[in-house]
Image 1 (cartoon, rainbow, N blue to C red):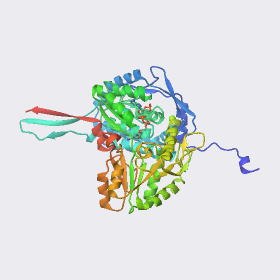
Image 2: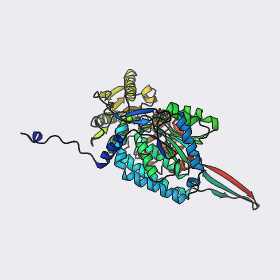
Image 3: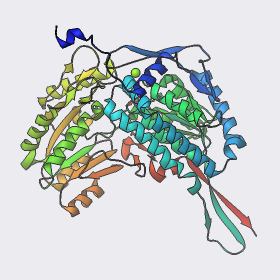
Length: 502
Ligand code: NAP
Ligand code: MG
């Protein structure tokens, strides 16, 4: 008898956090959070959320509608005006955020597993993101005691000062690609400033946001300060954008929906922050450290299976090294494993949905029709789950559809350029302006190009690194306003000038 026959196969060994995530899923359908209570939707409607790796049902979630948005706005307004929130000291608000950070850290594995199950990113990545969320809460926990106005110079007969105050009731609407981090960024900064919030995760990925909300409740945030409303964008998102008693919208998603939100928000002149799409240039000069540049180009193509707004989807390479870099990128990407997001060596999990997979594959088809050369990938992997190979196109012209439109999948276009001016011209030739990178050992050139590129973020000799202190947001059609760093604080506050005649 072989060893295998003697011992029946064991269930895969999973961590305690993984076990907790599965128990949480089994505990029953998930609800909306309104006014400090977990409730069914007033309509009684529910929706299902699925695992994009297995296409299996994960759980049922209450589906908010317009009536729930109205109820949540009333709860959030009441909480905003109550002294239990507006009256507490900035120190106490900071302590609360630190407490949330500690709870997020304690439950990081559980949150990471839920995120992986719901949206498919490798567990190795979602673990890091859960810990990042704890750090973001810690960063904003330091802010309440430092949000201050100014006293302004004026003649001796008058006294003039400026107060910096919260916006009021804020609606936070998120995309599905990095739900936990997006919820963390928006909620931490909004609460640090003393606002109350309505949070809408994407209908397709509500789970990590709902669990995060439970932890925020556990930390002791007063009832109504945080309300969570999973539901469809067309209904819940529109109701938020149109609502006359919501003061601010912070939205992350596509440029087309961002435009609709802007239009819908004019009724009461809401303040709007929009984090939208991108088609970011990643530019390699001949004097770059090519090993690092090639690795970063492949990583940004594959990270989150390419479903990242700031991915470097247009790789610009100086003509003289175009063939070498194209070949090295294609060879390296072939070593990246596509597979179960729970296997440690997996680099690419599934795409979020069948629809997204079909959209990405149709862009691959378009790229071929346009005459670009496919050097790696281009196909679905397997027939269960929405797995797609990382895909490299060379001989791409910046005017091709695959170089102009946001694909939101693991598809890279490699484009040649002649010189510095040509690189900047082509890099900026896009409706977007979210991120960009330049690879060179020439310090002057690095700074010249960083200044010339029209985007909200520029990396020099790296890609995709970030920090809570570093703001993020778009030039051009990549958005309005900024998030993270001090700029989130500006986005979630407004100023009041007070003048007194002495
Ligand atoms: P999306 O379709 O624009 O959806 C984003 C959110 O808006 C979802 O919660 C969606 O709800 C909701 N929504 C849909 N229609 C709405 C409407 N008419 N009014 C109000 N809300 C509405 O974007 P996505 O497909 O989820 O995400 C991918 C996009 O997000 C990409 O373009 C990507 O570049 C961008 N993104 C940008 C950043 C950034 O920081 N700049 C970060 C991540 C992603 P439902 O989906 O639940 O119906
Ligand atoms: Mg899902």
